[in-house]
Length: 227
Image (cartoon, rainbow, N blue to C red):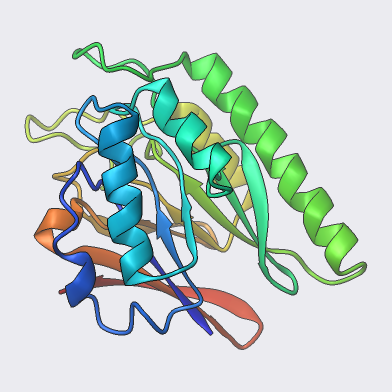
């Protein structure tokens, strides 16, 4: 069993059909920024293309999406923003979209304090779900957080500034999820370890990056791939 996760879509879905094994995957995860400041009509087209690639899609809005994008995902049962989903026995996914403030005034930005609060609340939802689904089992956590952790190789702009979130980094260092998938900073494609956590940014979908998630030796494993 494996899943495919793709990063910033920005209305460009052409690469989906080229991802090896995407139709056979247990699911397809869209980690944020489905549109370019788009609304429901744009997001619906992205969702339709994603469902053609794989019938089980989970998604969340990023900072470039208007609120109605999240509403569309909720109506269709696909939304993971501030939610937890059981992917397999003992394996839980939690999602937190949007971003902290940017210089560009994008549609869905929130404060650092609120983002950190969302992460804490959603993490607790994930722990509760894991415990109810498999009492006594170790919880394996996949965190899909659109904003990358601060001061890593995944949050550096082309000018060299680190623009990630201290709250995201603090969560990773404390909670130590198995895998964290971020995005938002397109030029910071890569992966890094923060303690036991494997943190990855696949970059723009249009450039062919994606993450393959699977289970091995009782743990969630992730690999950064490119079409």
